[in-house]
Length: 232
Ligand code: NDP
Image (tube, rainbow, N blue to C red; front, side):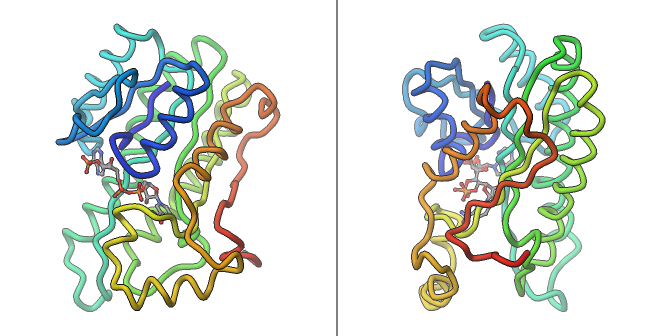
């Protein structure tokens, strides 16, 4: 199985959860391969490059065989109010979060469709539903993943390949640590369970979607957010 952006944060927790189940796990990294624990294969890849993505899959296929479970997790934020948001802040976030998911799904589909089995899981965010001030680029990229994964679910269903989406709420990682402390406290107050999620709690949803008992689940949106987005 392969996790993009698996050298830290939620992606690493996902990789570790699959490794603990005995799977062969590969992850991408851009700079910090050292963060990846022994037993998990790190492969350098920038998911905004189609060439890198192709080389990534070729390496995984050589070392582990065809990718049976793809987790598209790599993502970035570049927040700002729309009046001050540059074209580059818009397009770089769309490229890393949405177009990259298209790139890896396209490459993974080749073998999955041939094998008539496979699981694709995309990591979005509750902001896909709720929106968030300062995140027009990020929220748009994450909403786009809903249309992407549901279209894939329909496209792949006749071949037994599933596509699902996990929507994390606020999770303790470097991404949320970047928020000002006052904002972090404010967000905590909006979460019915009263705390940020742990990366391992997102990983649990992903291992479920990849498991045999989830064979009948496709085109679904699984929210893991401490109740933060109820009503959406
Ligand atoms: P982190 O910032 O901790 O990690 C992001 C990961 O994505 C890193 O491994 C990073 O690699 C990788 N990445 C970013 N851009 C690229 C790229 N162009 N090519 C390859 N890898 C890239 O984030 P989180 O773990 O918090 O987030 C993981 C996913 O979960 C993201 O998609 C995020 O949007 C989503 N999410 C996170 C939430 C949270 O509260 N933390 C809430 C909702 C969703 P590198 O080390 O090389 O930078």
